[in-house]
Length: 507
Image (cartoon, rainbow, N blue to C red; front, top):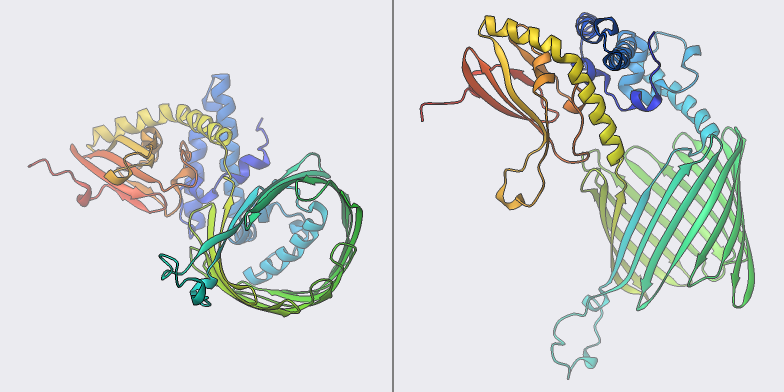
C-alpha cells in the first residue's frame, strides 16, 4: 500500500524536474515521462523490504507530480504559486476552467484567509547589520580649527554608529510560537545590547496575543503584552502595553494602532502612543510590485514631523531598489537617498546618504543576511533519499547499458554535479560535487539524453550538495566508441550526444 508523503517532502521537489519535462510539456509528454518513472519505481519490482519502501515513496512522489501537472487547473495554480499554492485550503470549491488572472485573484483571497488562521507560524530567521558613517566634513568644514594641524587638508570621515540585530521565530505547537531576538548597537563611543523573548498564541481565526520579556544594559527589564484583532476583513487593530523598569522607577507605555486596507495595495494607519515618547501618528502606505510609497504625519513629544518616502523596485534578478525620503520637524530637516541590491541568495547590501540640518551628512551601509534555508541535516536527508533512488535504478541502468553497448550508443562514463573550482584565484575554496553517473545513465533513451531548463537538483538520484552556491554538471560520455565531454550550468538545458562535445585525441 502506498505511503503518504509529508508536506516537507512535497515542498522540496520540483515536479517538472522530477519528471524531467519542459514547463511547456504537452499531456502526451507528461504521460510518457510518468509511465517511464512508474516502471522504474514500481514497488512490486523490488523484494528487499528497504528498497521496496524507498520505491514506494518515490512512486508516490512521481504519482503526485503527474496528478498535479496533468490537471489543467492544478497545473495553472502550480505554475503561478508552486506547491504552496496547492496547499491553500478552499481550491476544492473554486469553479473550474478559470483563467490565470482569475486563479491569481482567488489565490490572494484564500491566502488572506489562511494568514488570519496561521499568522506567522513558520520559522523566520533574519538578521540586519547597519553602519553609519559621518561625512559632514566633506560639505561643512571649520577651516580655522585645522590651520595648525598636520594633515588637516583631508576631510575627516568617521564611522559613528553601528547596529546588529538577529531574530528567529519557532512554532512550538499549532497555536504557539516562540520568538527570540537580540541586538547590539554603538554610537559615538557609547554602546549596549538587549535580548528579548516573546511567546505568541493564536487565540482564534481573527486574532492573537503575545507576551514579551526583555533585558539590556541601556534599559532595564521590560515586560509587555501585545494583542492583535481583525475587526473586519479589511480592518485590524493592535494594542501594545509595556512596563519598562529602570533605576528611575517603572515607566508604563501604551501603543494602539488602527489600520484599514484602503485598496488592494494601500493601507492607512492611525497610531496613538502614551507614556514612553508620547505621540499621535497617521500614515498611508502603498506597496506594489514596482514601488513603495509612504506619507506620514506625527505630533508628539519630543518629536513632531512630516515624512514622505518613495522606493522604486526594479524587476531584475538582483532585486535592485532605489529610495528617497524627506523628513521635516522640530528637530530640523533630513533628506535621505540610497539603494539596495541582492548580492547573493541570502544577502542584501544597501547604502543610504543622509543630509540634514543641523545633523550634517552621514552614510549608512546595511547588510541584511538571511539564514540558509537548508541546514546540514536537510542536506543529509536529501543525500540519503538520492542514494536510495540510485539503488533502485541499478537494475534498469544495467539493462540500458547493455542495450546501448549493443548499438555503440550513449554510455555515461562519469558524471559529477555540484561546485567546481577551476579558477586559480579561488583555489582555497572547497570543491563540493556528487557522483551522478547512474542517475544520468538511467535517463538515456534511444542513445539520447535530454535535460530540461531547470535546476538539476530535482532530478531523480540528484540532490543539492552546496545550497546557495553556483553549480555545474560535468559529463564524460562515450558515443560510437568516441569519448565526449561537456560542462553545463545548473539550470541550463542539455542535449547529448553532440559533435561539439567530442574530445580531440589527435594532440
